[in-house]
Amino acid sequence: MTWPTFRLLASLKHGWTDKRHEALVASSAWSEMPPFSQLGHPAIQVCQGFSDNPASDKYEEHKGSTRTAGYKVVEARDTSKGPGWRTAMINMHGTTWAVFADTHDKFHASAPNAFKRKQYLEPSEDDITIHEIKLKEDETNAAIKNWQREMVRTMLDLFREAYLSEGAEGSEITKLIPEPPKDLLPAGVDGLNANITLTVMRDSDEDCSFDEAHKEQDDAIELGISFEPWKVDEILKDLILSAVLPVIDPDEERWTKDAGYYSKNGDLCFSYFISVARASQLIYSAESDEETEEAPKEPQATQSAHYVTRTEIVASVVEKRAIRSVCGFWFVSSRVPDGFPICEECLDALPEASAVHRFLRQRTPGSAG
Ligand SMILES: [Zn+2]
Image (cartoon, rainbow, N blue to C red; front, side):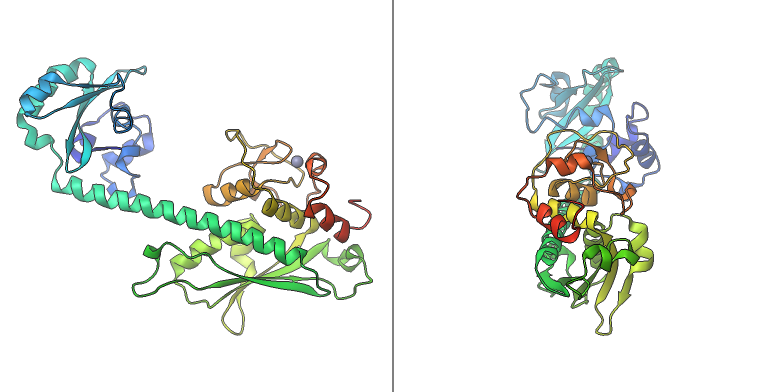
């Protein structure tokens, strides 16, 4: 990764490929920016492959600048279309810095002169400080995403176990919430040690078919989630809820506004009614870990409930991107309300021996065979 200095950023008055980044730089909104190495300008992007592949013909020592600087200056050449940016890179404080850039002819005319006053180009105290801060932020964000991925997977396992375990009145399964990155915990606290419990309630009358028992409720099943002990701060709470709740119900409107309440012993609880179709979708996702090779496509509108793999559920919750169904359909899960019938093509693609088949046979006599 090559890090542009503040001075270089301030000098990039045109050529931005990301207008949002251009505006953030123009207004010096440093705290809102991504790591500077990700900023959308060709003069910055052309430098990014350097540490991995310094021998690439995009990079070459810039003799004129090296002479005036007294140390090695490398030129990065943007050979894509447009004005042809050239960027000067130097190594300092254990990092490669992008310190000077201009379009082709201007660069060659001015870079050696600029390095005559190299103290103005070299990274300042502020550059070094923000470099460290941004790298730390980036690391933390990546750790949070990994934690949320783990929580989504845990939630799917929990759901599957609770649903498939036999019990006349339902079942209750508790799992430990995966531990968050240590940085997120208050000083002196070793771990979160919080549980998530999922309760599936079914009609107690075993003779009554599922369809009959739930006629009034549109084939729905109630479930509750409770966390205990609930002694985490708001940030942690939000991170947990934004990972586990959309697994059950991707429609955020539903759970943020109506579904949450505190039980008598202080646990945070949520209850939902979900359709048999959705339950079978989640069981399928808990069982299937395959990754799709395809790059995400434009999402399409759908009138069916599709099966998707666990990897896709994780992506829909954590990356908030469109996901691919088993039948090859791209869609945004939060835009598909619960209650649509199961997609016939997805159903046909299910392995006969899967738990989903068993589940559907048990819960919807006659309809899933
Ligand atoms: Zn489908």
